[in-house]
Image (cartoon, rainbow, N blue to C red; front, side):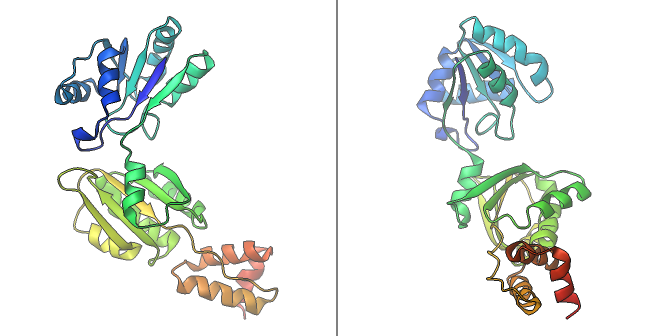
Length: 274
């Protein structure tokens, strides 16, 4: 059996008793960072009973066949990453897919998740959301990814490195508009936990002072396009309403064209050539 176990994202006492039990009884423990695993086990007062192997982004492909062989041979393999649930922007997907293909049972020990924790404390709608993970590091690729999400109606959750948080927020202003509601959640569950809420432009100004620690960004989904009538005047008013709500004009034109089921060019002409 393959066991995916969530580990604390901050406070060690968030660890579940099941995690401690699995660490003590698994035949093999595959860990993203074996030193962090040793520290976690020490903090939990647990002795890791099985053999420990490293399993991280750089060796996933090479290490997976051996772990699958151990599973097929009847061993219980526990997979843990540095924080949160394996496979969620962390190693794990390859091993899970390979284990399932080999006919091995896969179970999870649920627990801490930066995605759900940030979503819950953000104050933004949580009934429907999407997780986008880390944005591309290159500015052009990041802008293109965000442009694709400009009309996404669900609340969006992103991971980001602290030194790129300011640039990511600035790119979001360009894609989503300065007034789009968002929250930056920093160092969740840790001593210096901080949640900053506001419009994206406000958060850009806050991030200018520097950001430290683990960062999760939650952004409200696109506002629903206003009811759109069949005439260019209707399209023009609908675009103006979206712009007033903070949606960039280009994105507003796309939303209105989609709602009116007409080519974007016609809505563009209605806005720019009244």
